[in-house]
Amino acid sequence: MVDVYTSFIENERQKELFEKAVRLAEQAKKHAPQSDRDARFSVEVLKELKKEHYFSLPLPEKLGGEDLSLYEFLLLQERLAVGDGSVALSVGWHLGILMELRDEKLWEEEKFKQISEEISKHQVVMNRAASEPATGSPTRGGKPETNAKKDGDGYVLNGRKTFTSMADALDYFIVTASIEAEDQVGWFLIHKDTPGLTVDHTWDTLGMRGTASDDLILNNVHVNADNLVELAGKKKSQPKGWLLHIPACYLGIAIAARNDAIAFAKDFQPNSLDHPISEVPHIQQKIGEMEMKLMHARTFMYAVAEKWDRAPERRNELEAELAVVKTVATNAANEVVDLAMRIAGGRGLSKTYPFEKYCRDVRAGLHNPPMDDAVLGMLAKRATK
Ligand SMILES: Cc1cc2nc3c(=O)[nH]c(=O)nc-3n(C[C@H](O)[C@H](O)[C@H](O)COP(=O)(O)OP(=O)(O)OC[C@H]3O[C@@H](n4cnc5c(N)ncnc54)[C@H](O)[C@@H]3O)c2cc1C
Image 1: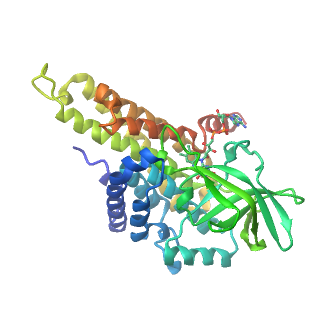
Image 2 (image 1 turned 30 degrees about the horizontal axis):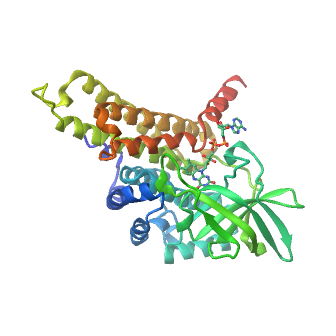
Image 3 (image 1 turned 180 degrees about the horizontal axis):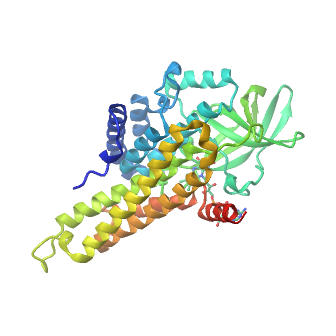
């Protein structure tokens, strides 16, 4: 079978990083059935990720990391998602946020150093909790209903966050809240053991069940003033290269479906044929279509990542390309999984085969940001301006 991986590996460092992802993908795959069944992030996989120092990879070398580039990040995340998309998406938030903080210097230097030290020493994990029932996707611009009231020198927070990936496994939540009296939206870094913070296990979804994207409840959570780490709109917003971990994740799921469908087609020989179905013309067409869609989407994604890494001073020009990569890749991934399902036939619906899980998981990509309608609207506005 053609090796779908090596064509994007360009040097020894990438090869080494990639091997780490291969090892972790194996672990993720092993624990995926249970994690999917229980809608829980696997404790065993979390341990393996920490053992491989996965969570500190984006940190600058002087702070204990590998200063991961965007291209390298995508190589790792895509390969991890071949093992289990849920693991890749969940940890992709942590790594991506760290890259964003590193590159955009969104936090005070001392605060970033402090969290970096904890991450490099103890592999602590964090994620942003930004979605809410009333605002839906934060990319739509809705104001958080979670509120932060001034309380002496600090703040007291109340609210409910939805879709908080790996909520049970996180050490820190970065929570958006409207700051009363100041008419501002802030990001608060809150440790998991802070009184008043609980996880409500609401996550019972069709796909990406292993992300355990549960609700986070804040009930009179008292924090210090220096827990307010960012103010929305304080710095000019820049395109978010790190969000490409989303298309990388769903392409990884599609690659897994493609691999399994080809293996199935080469192996399955019904007694109506004197050769496996891989030689049947309509199956060949479907395999060809899968290859073409993956090659197209992946070449585009890695090319944009290369541009991002090569010219940091021109990143502001990449907003549209980054958004289009996400739309092209997640839709291509859905189409590839659909083709894999057609190749597997009725067996593809059975839980004894991996295809139904790919089908459930890949669908979630449509509901990660930026959403298709927003991307198309943005392109149309640019074109007609
Ligand atoms: C697997 C998974 C993991 C996730 N992990 C996280 C996480 O860790 N942290 C986090 O904060 N979030 C997370 N999210 C949440 C994600 O970012 C979105 O907030 C969530 O999926 C809801 O998006 P939505 O478009 O369905 O919701 P909504 O914004 O509620 O949209 C619902 C419908 O209304 C339409 N709509 C809503 N507002 C507008 C508008 N202004 N203009 C036009 N149409 C509109 C949408 O197109 C859609 O059809 C995760 C989501 C998934 C699926």
